[in-house]
Image (cartoon, rainbow, N blue to C red; front, side, top):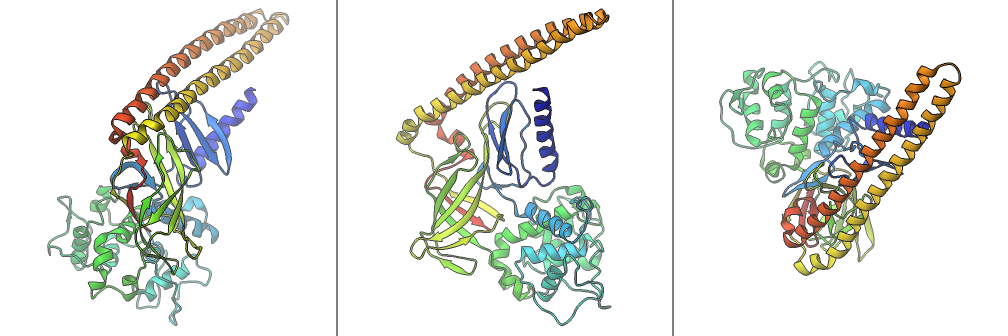
Length: 481
């Protein structure tokens, strides 16, 4: 039993380490109980399920908040971009340990990010670069970005793909794709002068600052004080460029913007939900559906209003005291289908932005009719997990006591009475610890039952208190891929 427990703990630790930086493959389903002393979670990795009693929840970092729903998340395009760069480099033979999202971004990586962010298509070109080998990991993206006039090479015929690109050069590249008014002054951000910006880049920097593309970029100090931006920071900027309404609406009016940029092909999906998704009741793997409110083109095919969008719940954390008070839920949108023609298309894997345009609550009758079932289910879940915890503690305790009693007799009758007495003392210590764990579980379980019932009653009477962690029928969303 001890060996099994150790192997189980090692498996959980390995999964946590392996997903710490880019934990996209892990799916998390966490339950509120025990609400006083920890959290129980179910971690699904590669289809295998395991349970953690009082363990730490394995949360993915690759998530983006849905506007107007503080505790609803979707996949983040910026995080997916970093993952794609890393994986593309690994396929080309680079060590994954070489990729550090906090390090300065290289010219090749910026070309990759811009080509992906603007959806430019790899274009053939008669002009190659003297320092880009046929098997260079970012070759197609570099040629795509330069063919679209998003980036340029050097007059010498080189591109210098592995050279870090300065912050000023990044701003100049981004500014070519936008058209906003700005003040012609020494560039400042949040009231502080931006360092390492030469005069030739003043206008570009001021335009990027005025656009708001920097508003959610991490590490403000680096934006101001460093000569370079990190890979992570640039991913956030390009992600904001994709979803920024100014970019989507006004880029074609910018005479300096490239033709390819103006045809970036952002997919904007306006949908109305048909199902309820709530941190209180949803489970990992739950499917949901929605209907499109307007015509939309996906993968070159037109889907009329009323087409069905299918999605899936990929993370859940129940409301509770120890974890997030309102819990959270993370969803992904998988495919779209025209019911008249049965035409289907896969939706992009990550989202640039997501907004809930019309917030709805289930009506009182619906909440009241649902209460007995969700309330009974949550109480049964708390009671069952508490009982399971008691059985687990008892089983482990009895095993340890048996081992220590065996050691007591073996050590005593092999002329080591001192060690035998120590083992006998361990029996008492294990017994005391077991009694304490029993009491803790029973108190926590009792409190958990009361808490879950109270939470269900609050939901029936004041549904808005849990609206931030749910998506309800008839709510309208705008998703930009």
